[in-house]
Image (cartoon, rainbow, N blue to C red):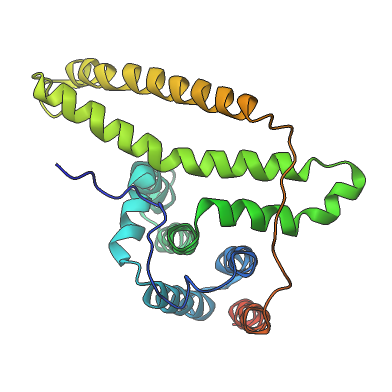
Length: 252
């Protein structure tokens, strides 16, 4: 059976967003994150949402991926919405102001998740590491280990799809052995998932040891060489457009 594509994993394609330099995309991601939280509702938030729609269309990223990205925090977000909307002191009921405020926060989180998914699905891990090293290069003058931070970020990003693949493989194997993850009470389900989580942690530690030995055998000492040239004019123009879009989001 074919493994599903892990959420946030790089998806090779020939789109406008794929062709943008990773440094420009990383700067645009920071700008989009700031704009998502700085834009006032409802007009500014609508402009930010329009930017996400354009990014999703230009990168051919499915809107379902955004919903999948929100799924792990769905319970926490639902509790937050209810906690702000339900009034238990004084006159019990539903606070429309609290409901509007909590829904706005959820929408902001959804925007950030959407922009992050567009970035991760259109940028390979080595390019992200090189972009981090290039953008953080001035910090090396004050003793910040820029190359080590970039390499650690690259390894962490690489392990995200690996973890998803291992989880799918171990869960399928345990299901074939008779494990049922959606039957019984809470205790029975937790016991069933223990048969997946324990082998998953062991497998990830094994992969980490193999990676450490491979880096030691290759005499890795924390140095990282990048061959990135100057940012193309087209990407500089895109960053300028992103700044203008963020300003419009914040002003409205």
